[in-house]
Amino acid sequence: MNLFDWRSRSPIPPPTARALALPGSQRSGKDDGSDASSENELAQAFFAHVTQVGVPAQESVIKDAASFPGWITVLSGPAMTGALNVPVELQDKLLAVKLTSGRIAIAHDPLDFAQVKTRIYLMRAELVDLGLDVQPNTLAVTAQVLREIRVAAEKKTGSQGAEVRSAAVEQFRQWIVQAKELGATDVHLRIRGGNRADVMVRVDGDLEHLPASKAGLTNHQVLTCMKAAYESLADRHSNSDGNFSELETRSCIIDSQLGIPNLRLRFNSERGFYGPAAVLRLLTTSVNHAPMGFADMGFGLSHCALLEKAQRMESGLMIQCGITGSGKTTAAKTFLETHPKNGIGAFYQVADPVEYLIRGVHQIGVQRSIATLSQVGKKDPYTQTVESVLRMDPDIVDVGEVRDPISARAAAIIAKTGQFAMCTMHTGSVMGILNRLVDPNIGLSRSELTAGNMLGLLSYQALVPKLCPQCALDLPHARRNAQDTPRDQHYLDFIVQTLGQRLGLDTSGLRFRNHEGCEACRQRGTKGLTIVAEMMIPDDEWLDLSAQGNDRAAWRNYQNTYSDGDLASANMCGKSALEHAIYKALNGALDPIGLERFGLFEKYQPSRRTHAKAGKEVLA
Ligand SMILES: [Zn+2]
Image 1 (tube, rainbow, N blue to C red):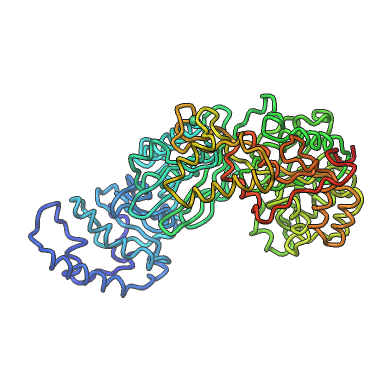
Image 2: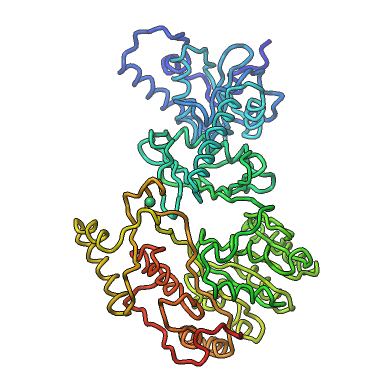
């Protein structure tokens, strides 16, 4: 039975027979003798016709799935190739459907006709080339109905879409397994120009190609995996939107569906010129394992003493700063899991999203929504959660990253009301913390921050690759290796001279990265990461100077008070991250070539060992 009259519903009334000849005629794969020029002419005629067509009258649009003709399968979509490949953004605006009658219909959303009209033409031409019987006229269908048809098609067991998807998920899983074996912290999926896509892994701080991707992957392969991972593996409520988008930011947590023991992923994707890029942060979830000790992470013994002192504080604000991927979350996990009150205190964490599972902590994942923030009278879910936690008699609340007035205010209120608050910030040094918190975008005041019991522990940390002990080079070998590149050699000499002559240090322990590597480090020259940190608990002088806005003097005074002024000593009291890094380099753990990321040597001034408290812990 003819369900309805195709022509009356089509936004494209039958054009001239000549224009129809190419896209609509039944060539059935036979060579009809048309040459390239006549095809071009026909194409132009078709385009001319198509561009004239406006939005169809409302009554000719299919608005519910029941009115859609009987269909067998959907032929187009993001997983298909050629003209049947319809990107995610358009997948609910354009569909090629095989009808129960055996004919193929092209259905599209009339509201977005301008976006898909070229595709309609190409799709029709390709289907005809495949020898299929294509309806001459398109179906005008609402996006909602198109979506229902597509979702129903994806659900059909054994349908091509589902097979493609499960293959893509499996492929994605293999990449993650390989990345885990390499000890990677992140996996980067990138769409590039020239239909080449990359799967890179970050190991010891550097990006490298995953072996599987060296052979070359197409944009389509990587995009399909990206989409399948987001849509099929995301934890419920963790994703920002149900469908992947090539044009919008997406984020989610992938955990229970991943099926790799003790591993979860944080997924973030962002649009780009050639296509989206996705980054997967690998998060180990060993909630039952013993937490990693502060010293094992690379903190100095005096840092550990300050962290333990903070664990004995009843109230105040602990601020950890550093860039993304500097190990802040791992340090916070250890801080909470080794806390003497773990298990007998009320510990809460409000996180966006929950990255690591922390023993003994009630963790609440929320999404900070810009959408709800802009709606008058509607509270952001983060604010709601923090307010609720404040009523739950907390001992410690980890409010996550402070990046707006809401989170900053939450942290300040907790600390002021006599509980212990923890937060993280993106600041490049301890000295920069106050300045950032009083920035109008955050909105705390100097007077409240420098009041007696507000600030507990301030710390900055970074993760730095450790040299491979098997193949690291001593100074003569490093010099020989650098001699072909005058620039490298010049810089190497500058660093060694600064350490040896200007600072008067013993440089015999310096080791340099061997870029050829060895078997032990898989040709990387580095093996694992270690923390470089600076840390302080404010004393009265620091608070007084900071209250006056004199942050540099406050930090300088703190250093002069507590530092032992000896760069070769293991005592990190009052020492900066640069000084911690220098100490590690002098002992051959870090490549000195990377030291200046913590501050330029030209600006560096050693602390003066003037104070009676030198080398002592603050408040000891
Ligand atoms: Zn090595």
